[in-house]
Length: 264
Image (cartoon, rainbow, N blue to C red; front, side):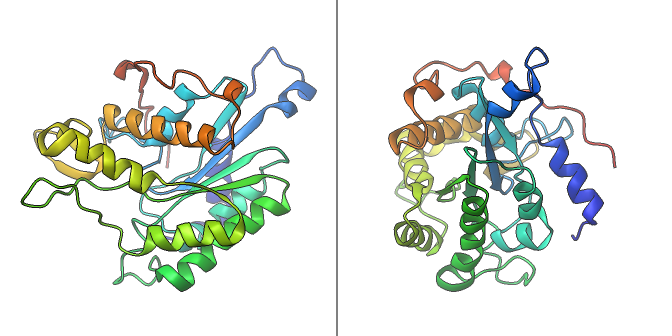
């Protein structure tokens, strides 16, 4: 689906966090923002999709209030289609020195039958990811790569099975080549699903009476993945200890809310 420039601009502005009303303009500019570019596993969900929850919805629970989250992740996008629709440009029009751009793609890059989204791991996927890195750096912001969170898939012996092919390896290689922090969420989530096992993982994915979704999360799953992201941001010194909170605390599911769908 292609969007007009106006639609992209409106969507971008809707993702911009509102500064505290008590702060002055100068103080508001000092607030750093972490932008998320990604797909449906991270995206904001609305009331018509509940209980489906993107991990980006839960990430603010683990960050201090002076570090805002602007979640630009959108369902169905790949590293290519996100760029082609002008969504990266929208972020780059807003991002400032000292901000962060966290990039997670692969789920839809893998769709070989769809030329509008498909990228090849070791060529076009890396080429598109470089555009995020170069764009953020040109704006004085810090880019961060995150390997794609794993789907829920187990073999006959109950072993969690990776599903993203060569994409995580290609991203790891690019991060090393470019000297960019890499959050290996693919490996960490795979290990988490292995620890939880076949039945317990159902409580983390969007399994309902009418749907058995092994890709998207419910509130517990989104919170668990967001916790992995926050811990990795701290471990790789992207964020300082003063920037994070509640890394080991219980997060109530009730903190997750789904706003009404955006007007067409």
